Image 1: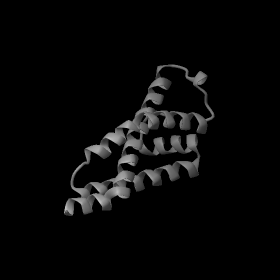
Image 2 (image 1 turned 90 degrees about the vertical axis):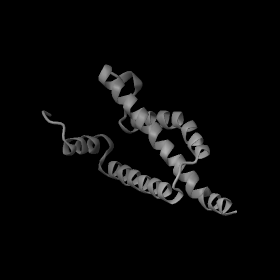
Image 3 (image 1 turned 45 degrees about the vertical axis):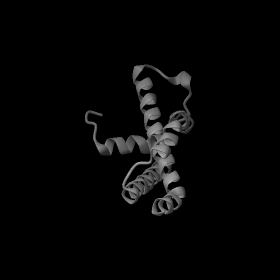
Image 4 (image 1 turned 60 degrees about the horizontal axis):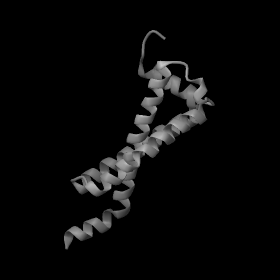
Length: 122
């Protein structure tokens, strides 16, 4: 692997997670991102209360992402071989934390969005 291209990364992730699971995860990520953008455009502002709850969920998302990757790849923490493996796990944890924050904020906004909008109208 001399070059790091998008095609190479897709092939690696397909090999790691399996073809179906990888593309399901991609579709779910695209759907959540689209819903988040919809909420931001609809509300025209960030709700600090919803943002706080989203931030409080971040440690859970980080741990869940690492455990998910460990389960899917049939690895164990004893298989961590060096600094690169630790960096990859930290990257997975960061992405899991950010992902769960976006998911929690979006879910709150979609669930409570109608009520918040009616409250502003009063």
